[in-house]
Length: 258
Image (cartoon, rainbow, N blue to C red):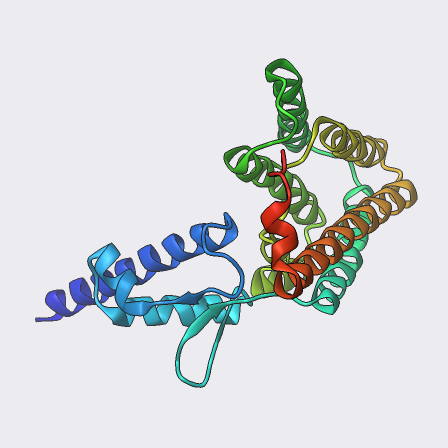
């Protein structure tokens, strides 16, 4: 009887984890857009499980700030405001500036250096691929892969600080995931090279154990990312407003290349 109870708990946990990972991947990849309502019934049929693990997964995602649950129990993918973006980046800058400065205060292990170098080299490879293929920017699949390497680079830098409280705060808020999951356009070769060079400068400062320079460079890198994100947000807001008020303008506009 006890064995059956344990098996039931494991199955329930497995279903919840599967639902969580499925939703998490679709939200962070942009397949489920911000502001979209999530249907428990549809997902339950899609995954072949009951609605209970779906509901539990949505509760976890809500705690991480990726969805919000409306009074009618509907879950909606969070649509960040301009101020939300600023607030998240301010928290990110405070944490990463401290973490990178601390990481640079002691020698970097060869294994960690190899991992960080590999992650950053992968970012440059995206630029090289764009140039070879003649594509103007990364497509959705390319951006998903880029985000994985970029997120990996920043996450490892934070872990190098060996500060349990910072790690807990980042994990509890899923800070980096919320930031990196924001909708964005495909990066072009110029921007990819810029990101690569900024990462390389930060990494070099950490290798040389120059805490002050490492902290300054990561701060500048994050501030640059925030400016780009706000410019993109403002442009999308203007376009959305125009579509609502003068839709005929977009009906006669030629299709965009991006």
